[in-house]
Image 1 (cartoon, rainbow, N blue to C red):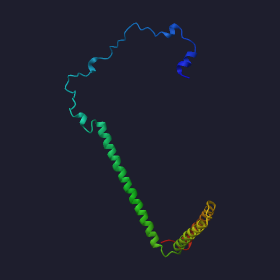
Image 2 (cartoon, rainbow, N blue to C red):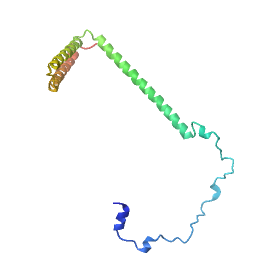
Image 3 (cartoon, rainbow, N blue to C red):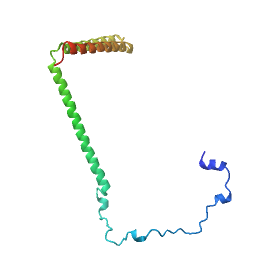
Length: 168
């Protein structure tokens, strides 16, 4: 329902209410002086160069915005560079950690378990697929088994690394 329809359903205005109030005089405010008005003939009025519309930057606000955007772009590039350097340092530290602990039996055991599990699951899945017996139920079951074995391996490895074979 529109406002006009809602107003039409309401009570009607009397002729006095419908008429605008009568103003019998012109409002004059003499409190402000004309001394604050700018004289257009004074020398502080500036003209605009003829090539103003062809300029790339036309206002100081636009120039400030462009400068701010350039500073933000520089800050973003610096942030990305710092993130890349941090990621590179972390990767290098992790690689050095593996190299330093290549004789640790926990690291070696986990690598062997990972390789054998991957090869066994891949070969078993290929055989089931070739027989036409590979289903989502079978994949889900073996995924759960791998998850449980992974959780047990995590806690056993953590205990071994803390108590028996601490990393270098």
